[in-house]
Amino acid sequence: MATFQFVATTPKEPADVLLFFADMRNAPSWDLSVREVERLDGDGPVSVGSSFRVTVLVSKRAVTLTYRVIILNARDGLVLRAINRLFISEDTVTVRPQHEGQFEVTYRARLRGRGVMRLAEPLLQGTLNELGARAGLKLCEGYFS
Image (cartoon, rainbow, N blue to C red; front, side):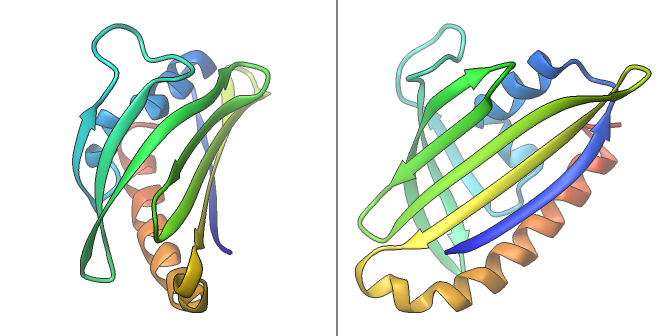
């Protein structure tokens, strides 16, 4: 399984951070691999069960995944999961108090190939490392500051 994790510190409130990541329409602002996002479950607040069709560029190939919000609460954080015929993707976000109005945000992305794509997991790891590092840098320069 290809995995990437980054940790950042922010003064933003945990609920705001979790909702920012839960609404995947925000992803193009920080994840350069995201090409298009469409919310599938209508309008209203994002909550458990909300779903998004997300098109990402993985190794020069457009891949569409349908993400669903599985968990969204202050204690457990956020879990977004997508499954298609090629991949299973799971992103988790936790926010913990650090010190004097600062919070530590941990973002972890896991991507597992399905079927024959399992053989490509070592290549996926390199791609995920590169995309994740760029996304983390963009978040630290923008949203988290």
